[in-house]
Length: 285
Ligand SMILES: [Zn+2]
Image (cartoon, rainbow, N blue to C red):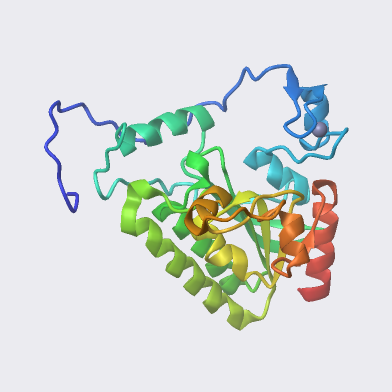
C-alpha cells in the first residue's frame, strides 16, 4: 500500500517486472557519429577501441557489461545480488506509471536496475566491484541501486577486499521519493563501516556523475578517478547559472576543471583504466 493514494480513472492491469530477462537491445546502426568531432566510424571499429573515438579521443558511453570486460581479468567476474528488483513503494505515477517505466526499461536494456555488482579480479587481485548503468533510467539511484552499492562495501568489508565503484548517474530516482534520498546516507554509512578494514576504495566517475550519487559515496573515494571530459557535479551547470544568475567559466564541472581545482585525483584514459586500477590496488591494497 502506498503512502498516499490518488484516484485513478482507469484501473489498468498491473504487471510485475519479473518476466524472464529479454535479450539485450539489438539493431544499432553500423555507423557511429562521434559526439565530439562528428567523425563517422564503423561501430565495430569504435567497439574495438572500447568506444573511444580514434580521431579526437572522445569517450563515448560504454555499455555496462563492457565496462567489466574492460577492467577485470577475463572470466573473473562473478555477478551477485542479481535477484534484487525495484519496488514501487509510492505507487508513483507521472506521465506514466513507475511500474510501466521499469518494465519498459527492463525490456529495452535487459537490466533489472541501474547497477551491476559482484566480485572479480584486476591484475590477479580480488576486488568487490560495481558499476552504474546509465542506460537504465539515467543511472538514477533508487532503493535497489542504493542497496547494491551498500553491498559492494559490505562484501569488501566481510571479505577484506578493496572496493571499486564506477558511477554514472543523474542522481536520485524521483519515482521513489524519500526512499531514493535515503540511499545517500545508507551507502555512505556502509562505506564508513568498510573503512575499518583499511582497504582502498577507488571511485571512478564517468560521464555524467551528478546529484545524490556525486554527493555521497562517489566523492568519498580514497582515490577519485574520472574519465576525460566527464560532467561531474551536484546540480547541472544550467541550474546553477539560473540560480546564481552568472555565467560559469568554460569547462566548469568537467573532469579537467575539477582536477585543476583539486576535486579529483586523476583523469584516466579508458584504455589505461585497467592498468591504473591494478597499479593502485598494488600500491594501496
Ligand atoms: Zn571524435
